[in-house]
Length: 392
Ligand code: HEM
Image 1 (cartoon, rainbow, N blue to C red):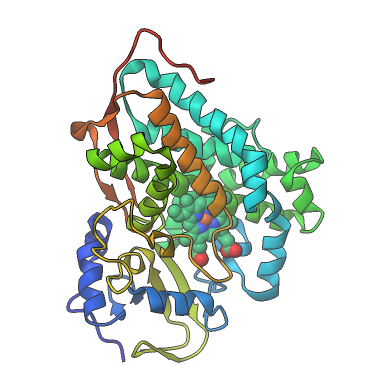
Image 2: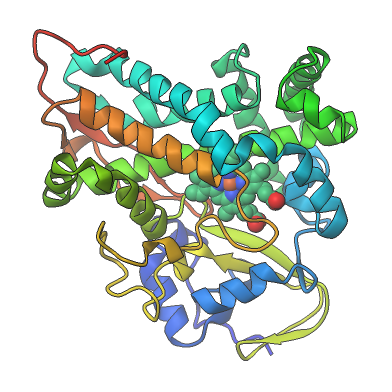
């Protein structure tokens, strides 16, 4: 039976600040039917794990899955053997060692190049000045698309993203989206034809449609989320001057800042699954075909796992138990890269922007229904006559 949460938060409530609503829902049971979503919402960590690990019962392979309608079948929209085929064709550059050794030095330099480009100004809005351009250049570099113009890629990305949202809202895919898919597809086909790099390697294992769909999913999986993670980590760190001082004194704490930032506000806060058969879970009777949405934001603030869960605490010993990158077959392919990217961004900020502090007037807290990030992270710092350059 579907117990409606009474009357349950609206989508606008969840977009603005979901955390008090998630806490209330969780207190009356970890799985609730949410009329605003037209599906079940899972709000505790144990049930979230149960759902995400069981892709036989809770699948992503459903005609309602909007990304697949726009870009085609990919690792994100398939399960079982087909999923493994898609994923294994792209996994090599994203393994922990490959990220550290092959992408690490480039990432460090790129973060410093970007921060160096505005260090002399004494102030900036760090989401748009740093987090966004770093997210785009990182994924383009990783896929061997480094020669593509970032603004053009961002244009395609926004149009395709809007089309995916449109499909969610019941609209048809418009001509603009068809043209954006064609533009991105041409760029990817051209790179494959170049014969080197991860896309060409994947083309040895998958057909051209699948190479395109997975490349698009990797790009879209990376841009919004990495931008949100870096902006969120800077927001939380700069919002806590005592913790900022500690990190300045002990830079090994940057990795802990990243992990706690991932926990407290997952940049992708909801993931969708569809029940393949009737099933009882945590007392909820789910019917075949029902939408089951897992709130990663809810799981990450489950008070039975995380003490004082609303507090940003870089010394939290179990922060790594967050589910921000999910678990199970769809665990984020880019998690090692995303972690390193945010670490390098913070390091570059702390190295190149002396005396950095938050500018509350130019800062807005995280918001968003599925993708959450602070819209702006204003900051000021001291400018010396000798402005540091990107190659420090
Ligand atoms: C360089 C950055 C990133 C890349 C290349 C990337 C790529 C991907 C890909 C390809 C998948 C699909 C895996 C599969 O279905 O087998 C995925 C899943 C996922 N990623 Fe990432 N990602 C990146 C960063 C992030 C970040 C920063 C977050 C969150 C803060 C995130 C959250 C997720 C989540 C929640 C899923 C699971 C989706 C689901 O199960 O429905 N990703 N990622």
